[in-house]
Length: 173
Length: 441
Image 1 (cartoon, each protein chain N blue to C red):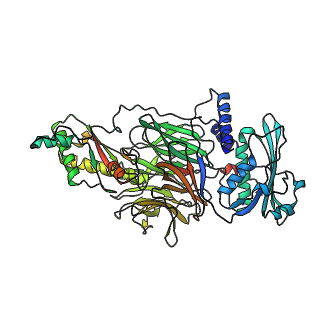
Image 2 (tube, one colour):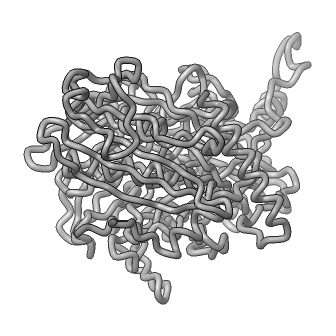
């Protein structure tokens, strides 16, 4: 019964809309002018081919780290632990050596807590990586930071392993 | 006979709302926890002639409205002894038999040119007295609005407080669009009907906030791949960019007089709370602390602003004067407290409170700092009060999807509002439409 009423309401709205075709538009629509930069996670995943070597050289390890483009964090924290520090340092070294490349650091949070606080937390994480980059010789005019807070999760589940993946800074260049 | 005054302004809003894009999915309401002991009320189906069937069962909409409020228990129509639609047909004894304390009757008749005349009367069964009687003449597409206004009148007559059935809510939806998502800013009637899409974007939208006159929404949009603040007129659809400084531009909150917007900017390096005067966009910085300061919300008298800060190490709620002075911490229970907003009477706050990884909608009485958790779901967000202070609307997660939920401020009545597909989040309850206040004698 209720559904029928709803259908009727929608149908009436359709009729009114049709009767009023050519009326002024009331909603601006945002065009997506993106070029595929920014939000799309890119370049992640382990590099095949490293396994099976008898010994990794220093250069191999750096290459392996460069394949990792995400820096992960503990809950409500912007501290970079040793494992993630190695990733940041590898990218900083590469960027210090390739001065024409610009980098975007995109900060993200997991879904827990409030959205606006998480937006601030994502920025703080991006800035933490930015500070390390600067110390390691990447000039600030080549670094852009942006926070998406909890708005762009890469793992859609609502559990600890998804949250761990979503608390991140993406290094994009 | 008394009539409701409808302003032209409100009329226009509803006209536009009826032109909602058809793609807008309707939020459906599910009562997840009812309550015993509401006022027993008999709502008789409105009388209509057999050949002129009205397009809407007005009595059914009124019954749903009143039942959802938790303060009324509609009586089953099957046990009605009679079905009066006119004053002369009312026999109070018949209503005392079915234990009704209040009785609603009415009629709906065609009034020509697609219009309908709706009459209704509300009675006190024990005093055998009419409490209200109104007549409306409206077009067929306005009958749902008439029904909500009847519900508001009944609610106010019997509880002494204004109803919120004629108000609207805004919210953000997220739906799959191929590999990506489509985000929408929408508004709908408080019961989920008449959804209107105000903005569609391929990038996230956040933090809708109503102006006190209900004509504008401030919100955050990532359409330029960073958080930028807009204010959009919901009647005309036009919008202006309010803040696009480097860093975060977010957390808009209107001053109660509508002349200023509190907001969070990180243009100086870390998130601080500012106030923007909307007449000339002049900014005043209110906080200056290396911690995160965000989520401002004005007290109803405009004298104070509460906000979230992690200056103690974890996010907690602080209160300051509206000029930024006299900062005091107000939450001490639980390790995480954020996103506070005031009740309409200014005596309490609703907020997100977290402990041991679970985040609930909660209520904080400002006198005595008593924190009461209102929910048992672990991922609650964005709670805010209905304009009459009786309900708190918030976002939560159910079966892996974002849904809206409401809980009465005494915690007794709970409802879910969900979409057929996709997620819905960040509800914002519009203020009372002052121009539709009832004309009393």
